[in-house]
Length: 179
Image (cartoon, rainbow, N blue to C red):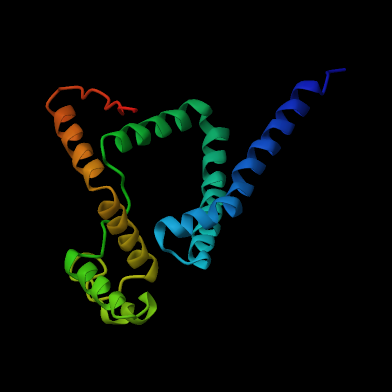
């Protein structure tokens, strides 16, 4: 009779790993909302949506694993990771233009909420031309703007490093000088 030690150990590790990932969100959510400016309900909704997408993707990935084995899944994953490393992230292009972001920032400074501003914004180009952007898209654009404003030197350094890498140079790591 085969020992159940190894499968039981693997199962225990899987449960602990999933628990760490799943239960880290409520612990980190206050820091996420503080850093992005998103309300807690929005971050929780995004996390819930990510879980649903993960579950739906898991069905498809499981079928590929059953039909073709792990090599196809690993090859696809590696290809997507390589594309991401090269800055090719897929997904929809941003629908919030600089003019729209300026309008949102100006009106928020005047005390309006994103939910009040959203119906007045119109997407100017693309597949959703003439429609309103989602509230999540506006919050995303605000978070990206805040990140750019908070770390302008880091953004400039990243752009310089990327340009150097495209020209074949490998940038040296920046070492902090400690007093």
